[in-house]
Length: 116
Image (cartoon, rainbow, N blue to C red):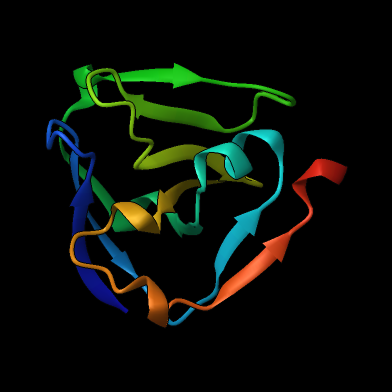
């Protein structure tokens, strides 16, 4: 596990996260994730710090409305979302938004979100 920084395209939303990029990224085929090309890695909220941009985001919820999809209201990038796994608060980090990530090194795990 290592600390990484990331955020949106216009840099209004910035975060730090302790994340294990050796873990497979979830590549979901639901209507939302597929159209946006999201690659997600869930981490406990305690491993995520929003450095800037709380007021620069818009929330979107759909289907079961359990995940708070957040995107920059200026550039539109969804850098992360918030949700829960049982009682534990989680953050779904879009690993594409991590600074200087080499996507060719990322293992992907297909998820059939259309079936949820």
